[in-house]
Image 1 (cartoon, helix red, strand yellow):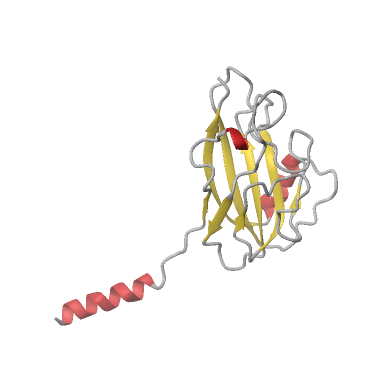
Image 2 (cartoon, one colour):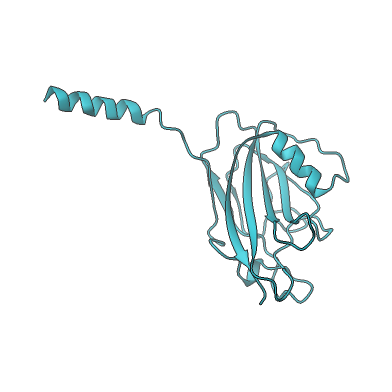
Length: 181
C-alpha cells in the first residue's frame, strides 16, 4: 500500500509540471481548402473567406499574436503570402470566419492586416495555377513577446516575416492543401 501511495503522489506531482502545448486548429479547414476559402478572382471560383482559426496553450509572456497563411509551392521562387495579420491582443484566441475581409471589421481592436502577395490588404485565398499538383498552405499562429510590432509602412510581406520571427516565443501551424487540377 505504501508503494501505491508513493506512486500515486508521484503521478499527481509530475502532472502539475507538464509543459503546455501551443496548438492551432480550424473548424473550417482541416487537411484541404474548400471553395468558400478559395480566392474570388482569376477564375479561381471561391468566395475568398478567411477560415475560422482558434488556438490555445500560448507560452507565458505572450504579449500578442500574429497569423499567417503561406504557400511555399507558389511558382515565384519565394512562395506566396496569402494572409498576414498581427498585433492581435494576447487575450484573443480565435479569429472568426471572414475576419480577413479587407475592412478588418471582424478583427479584434488593434489588430493590423498587412498586404498579401496579391497586392491587397487582408486575406487572399488559394489560387494555384491550373495543372499544378496541390499546393501546401501553411497556416501559422505566432505567440509574440511584444504587443506591437511597429512595422514601417510599405514593408513587403517577406520582411514582415523577419519581424515576426524576431519576436516569436512560440508558433503553432497546420498544413492544408488545394489544387485546381
